[in-house]
Length: 288
Length: 278
Image (cartoon, rainbow over all chains, first blue to last red; front, side, top):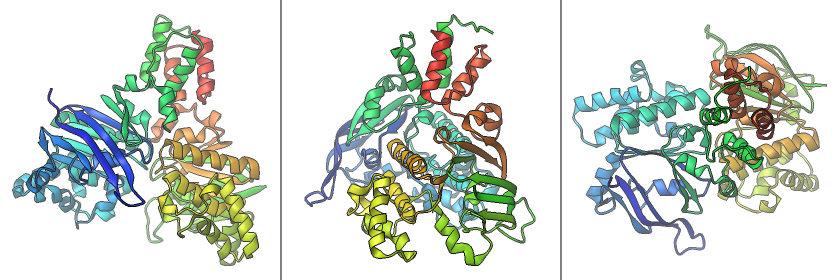
């Protein structure tokens, strides 16, 4: 399948030509097809946030290019403007960016900028609120009266309302408890299934993302260090730890079991897969 | 010696509010020198509890005593804040100076500590958190984990007997989280500082002496992590989870295997599995 979004030799240098010059992203070739749910992982300063900010033209490459369905997103001002509606970016702590008088107006801000009709906008607001699990009764409240978790949902809804083909989220669950994290991820999956676009999901929590992503991309020092299906990436326990990441504890447990001679598969990262692998070892039966 | 004691601690933000209070008649005693983790879902009241520990919030009902001092007595507030230091979630909101060592000196300066003594305290505090080599750096250029350790050093330099940390790792990457946790454990181990760690990361509670679980303004479990984490259904029912090690054992027990639910660490879990499956 032809890529929906891709980067070619993308390089970004901050403060180029000054003593503070810093290469944040270096020669990154990346491509994502429609339907992929990609987890993007990397320690602080690995370049992952700089990378994703190129995908809708917020940052311009120092060199290299970003293509949306083959078209250079920085080709002209008109293209960049169009791309903003097709590649939606949810920043970290997006609830600090709510600013309108009502939740409804805040979610409608993006579609309005896309010059959609009034009815279309209203319909998208309701649809987006539903996707993030925000009750319709909250739409007429001030966003500042919402709880932290609700504000986060409202902010994500504001991006989803543009129905982007590519949805990029930068740590959307930071600061939420396990139930809140699970709900947000599920809602994003639901959006992903319904729209059939591409999701890029930046996170520090490998355990959370590993259960949902079809592919993991690991950044280190401005480059892609590992790229593949979760079970493939989690085979590289030592490399992941060396670049400051932790692998899921289930993966660590299995790596110990393997080193002690137990014949269990590599790349196990969820409790369910672990249970299955161990049951297979015993021929499926318990001893109780 | 109880460094913290609450009796029927009740709190509501609005005195007129007739609804459910945020904290509902909490009785709690914390032994000096212990490492206590407080776990709870968003809105469980755990941060509100933390803010009662040095008089940022005062009880709507009931009492809080810090080292025997009633937090409601205004003239004891300074002594209370010298006894209990607070570290918050966002390191950017806690840093006040342009140079790391100036930032760490801010607390002791305000306490009126003499200059030569401040110098000693700042150096020691920065060494305690592993940030001494960054003492002349600008805080805003540090990583989140490094900033958080500078914020902790700023508290340590005031020589508190207890540190309360309210989700100190929520904004950090895995290595930043690990560094901050190791630092806090070391302060507890080597200096006997009482630690109250508020979190909703299950894994961060594994090394604690005691684990308190809060839900809807009440304490619903209190014991060692080994005693609390096996209560898988209770924890999940209140919006929390268990460490993946416990989750794995829980599923395997359902399948009929005789495995312990209190093998919390990766090593213990692997050992227990090896014994059954090898």
